[in-house]
Length: 254
Image 1 (cartoon, rainbow, N blue to C red):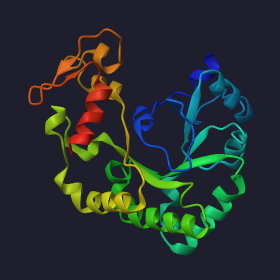
Image 2: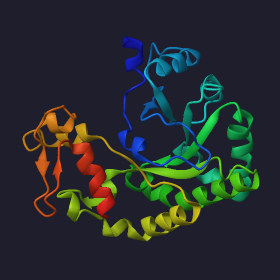
Image 3: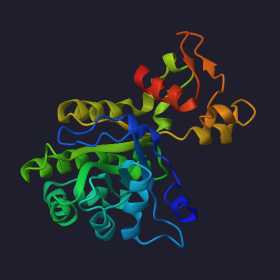
Image 4: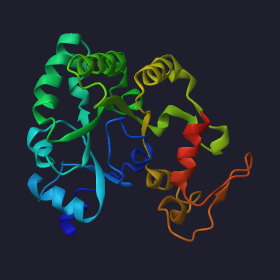
């Protein structure tokens, strides 16, 4: 069990609330982010059986490592495969995107079930946002087009993972709104999602909110402790028993 903890450095809880692609069939409610930066990690081939015993039905990878993707072949687990930030420039052209899909995605199909590509990670609010942001939407569009041309458009959806920092405020949830300075980039991305039918993905880390304000945020609220009384939205009157639910509601309010 200790080895399994290495698989859970960042639990992407909001991913569990996203709809599946039309071709996705998993009904599992549990998903994890499979981080591979560390030591004493279990071999990739031993990971799917461990996750299967826990009922995990969806796994997020932060890159397209071929050996890791192959390890999930014929398991029925849906993969969310990352396109690393350092690849954004190269896949922001039609030829580059087509080459990446041919080399990183097509060889794994259909044995491995790849449901989503996440193009970059928290690009708009990250340390390299000034240099990477201009590539984000073109990369998403080009990868979407490359998948369509390969006949995989209905099987693999294209999205990107944002940080909750795209919100100017998240409390109370009913009053949340996007940062105005990011709207010139967010609005076209949202339009892409509407046209492509792909989900808007956000990394939700309630514990980080507690760590930034341990006196103002109860740890029981941040860690989803069962039985905690929770917090009420003074505007809507809705009651949230944990911070994750409140963060999700804030995104829906935008």
